[in-house]
Image 1 (cartoon, chains in turn yellow, brown):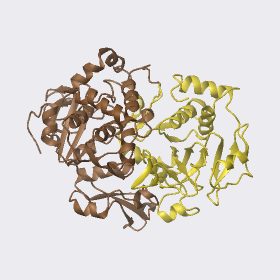
Image 2 (tube, each protein chain N blue to C red):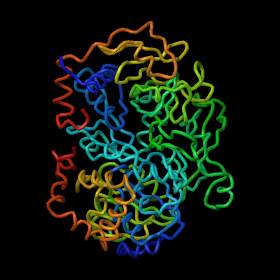
Image 3 (cartoon, chains in turn yellow, cyan):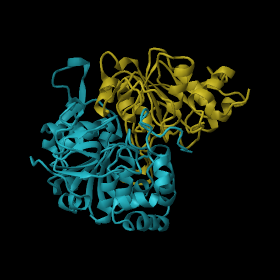
Length: 253
Length: 325
C-alpha cells in the first residue's frame, strides 16, 4: 500500500480521536486530522475552531481557521469568546482535545511558536501563540505535530509559548494550570508519548523503515526507546476516506 | 458618542478624521477573513505613521499595515495568514529587523482585553499562559510604559485567586484592558446611523468596536435606518458605538466576506511572493496601493473575471471549487 508521510501522520492523529471528543483544530494538517477522524473512526466527534465556529460542515478544506468554510452549517456561529469558553466550560471543557504545531519542543512537551533567539531581537520570528497557548493551558489532552529535526527537539526552548508539563511532574499544578498536557507527538518519523510518572517524552512507535536510533539522532535530548513498536500504517480504507472524503482537492496532502 | 441619524461619509474623509499619526487602533476580522482592507489601504495611502496596533490574529491587514510603514508598536497574538503565510512575511521581516516593537499575548487574552475595555474595567482574569514566557517576557520596557499614558505599567500580572480556591482555581493572570483610539471593522450590512449586522463569525469585532473611543464601519451593503430595525436579533453592534459609516463593496478584499465573496487566492499568493523582497514589495505598494486612488480602482484593476471567480455561492457563503492551490 503506497502512502505519503503526511498521510501517515494524519492517520496517526485521527486514530487518537474518540467519538466523544470535541476537537480543536488549527490550520493545515491538524484540520485534516480532525476531518479524517470524523470520516473514519470517530463520526460523533465535534470539530471546532477558536474563531467561534462549532460543528462546521466541512465540504472543502479551510485554509485558515478564519476561512468562510468553517462558518458553513455550524451548530452556532459565535466569536473567540465563545470558543475559549467551550474549552474551559466545566461540562464541555473536559472533552476538548487540542491539536497543535510548533517550531520547538522540549522533553516535557512545552512548545515554542514565537521566536528563535532573544525575544527582543530575534533571529527568526514565528507567528506567535494565536490560540495555541490558550488551548494548551486549558484542555486535558492535546496532540502535537512536528517535523523531526535536531534543532526542533531541544534541551531548552528559546521561548516557552504553550505549556506542556512545564518542569515535569506537578509542574502544571505549581504554575496554577489545570491538569492536562500533550498525550502524543506525531512527526514525520515516529509517534512519541509522555510517561505517566515522569511526564517525559518517550518513543512509542516508529514508522516502517525507520530505526529508533535514527530518531534519537534527530533530537538534542535522549528519550526512552525501550517501549517502541512499529506503527501500523494506514489501511486501504483509511487512505481512501482521507483522500476522497477529506482532501479531494489535495490542498494539504 | 455620536447619535447622528446619518454618519455616512467617504473612506478618505473617515480615515483623515480619525486615524492620526501615533494613534492607537485595532482592526476587525481574522487572518484572511473580513479584515477592513480598504481602510488598511487608505491608511497606507494617506501615509499615516507610528500607529500603535492591537491585534489578535488579524493576519493580512496587520501584515499590510506593517509593510506599508504605518506601524511602530504592535500588541499581537498571531501573525499568520493561514496557508498563504504561516508567519506573515512583512511582520516577520519588520520584527527581525527591529522596525516594530512587538509584544505577545494569546488570542483569548487579546479578546478579554478588548472585552474589559468595552466594560470600562481595568482588567479581567484568566488561567491562560500561567508558567509561560508570555508572562515573563515583555516587548515594551518599563520605561516605554512609564512614558506613555496609554500603556499600563505591567504586561500581565499573576495573582492568587482572592476567592481562595473557589472553582478549583489557585492562580490567575490579570490581563489589562485595551481602549483603542479607533477600531475599524468591515461588516456585511450597516445602516446610515451605524447599526451593524455581521453574518457568520463575529470573531472579536464586537468587543473591539465597543472598547474604542471611535469606530469606523465599512460595509458591503448600506441599508436605510428602518431596514436593520426589522429582524434586529441579527444585529450585533448598536449605532451608539459608531462614528463613521462608509459604503464600501468589496471592502474586505482580498480577504473574504462570508456570503459575499471568498478570499482571493491569486492575490494572496502573489502578495506572499512579492512580500519576500523589499524591491518587489515596493513595486507592489506602488502599483496596488499608491497607484490606485481608491479601493474601487483596485477592484477594477483585479478585473471582473477574477471577482466573479471569488463571488460567494449563496448557499455555502464561499466560492465553491475555487482554485486555491
